[in-house]
Image (tube, rainbow, N blue to C red; front, side):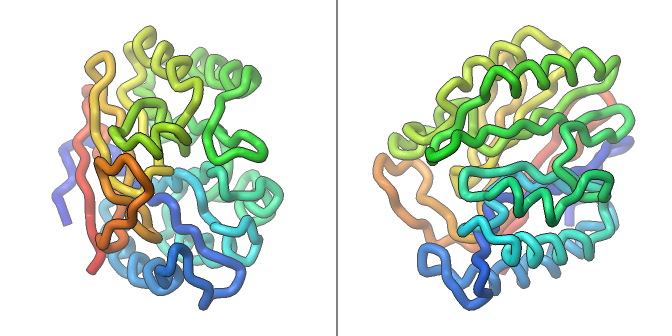
Length: 256
């Protein structure tokens, strides 16, 4: 485990667990429940140094409440507050039933960490694999930014707002990502953006700030591939140290 940066808030980002209602059911031929169980032990090792956890979507593969519940059990064992974002595979009713308002782990728009806030966005587009931020969601973002005061902001969304250099994944990304990037450029308190969906780690900069994706807890996609391709990597998560000066230190932790 990496020593936490001095004065930082540490956030653990997990993404794309893709569990099914039946625990033995694979996703993309991967034993996703076994991978999630293995990841929980490593997450527990990190939990003592962490301040919060964020799941950036596709909690389930089939939208089932049973799958959401098994993910919730693993996350709650960490005894950390956290934020759950919906992905294109998730059913909102199942997520809301599992991560109810007022729970330490919830779908709340804002995860308040004192000097930092994580503002979550719902990028689901009904009936589509790609993402879209509707006008209501963008208005809610603007309201949350206005209420944030002097806090540093980390934006969290399932679909990445930038190209990840994979043609097939870029085609199913956030189709109005520029709306999010425009707000990033205009607001100096927004320190970065995290997302899931692409099933591998990707890092780039926009307006001098990091835009990051997390690897999947389920199965990894091959980075740089123009066509759908599975990679052989293990489940993994991203850690982020949110520093008092608004900078972010980050890395990837792979699970054997």
